[in-house]
Structure formats: structure tokens, C-alpha cells
Image (tube, rainbow, N blue to C red; front, side, top):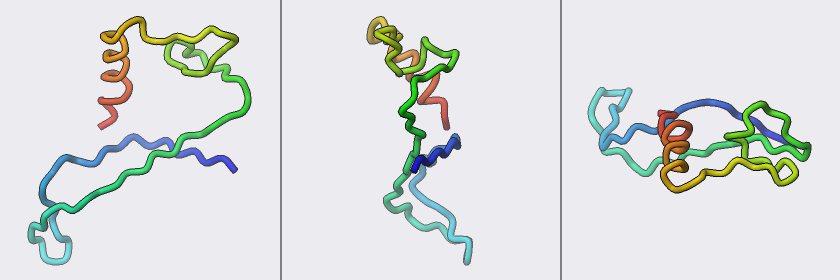
Length: 81
């Protein structure tokens, strides 16, 4: 069984939440986030070879250096908020 969930979200970095019953502040507890991604056993044919991490007969675009990798992460991971 494959499960795919594609939602962009983040958990805000706050110390308090508002109790909806009485509108009082309550200290934020531990929060856990789960991310589900679709897995496939077939070859990827997406048009984004420069960002896709699927090995296409040895043709794989990987970051050229640490700075390039950081830029990719900033553009496609950090901005999901």
C-alpha cells in the first residue's frame, strides 16, 4: 500500500498556545510532525532531473558543493513554512 500526502505546513516556533475553551495562554508542549511521501518502484520520469534524487542510469543531479546544496535546501525545504 502506498500513501501520499502533499501538504505544505510547518509548526510555528512559539512558546505558548491559546486554549480555545477559555482563551488563556498555555505553555506549548512537545509537538510532533509526520511527513508522508509516496514511494515508487518504477523509474521516475519527472521533468525535474536537476532536483530529482532518482538515479536514472547513473545520471543524477547532486549538489556541486556545500553552497549549492544549501541553496537547494533553502529554496525547497526551508521555505515550506
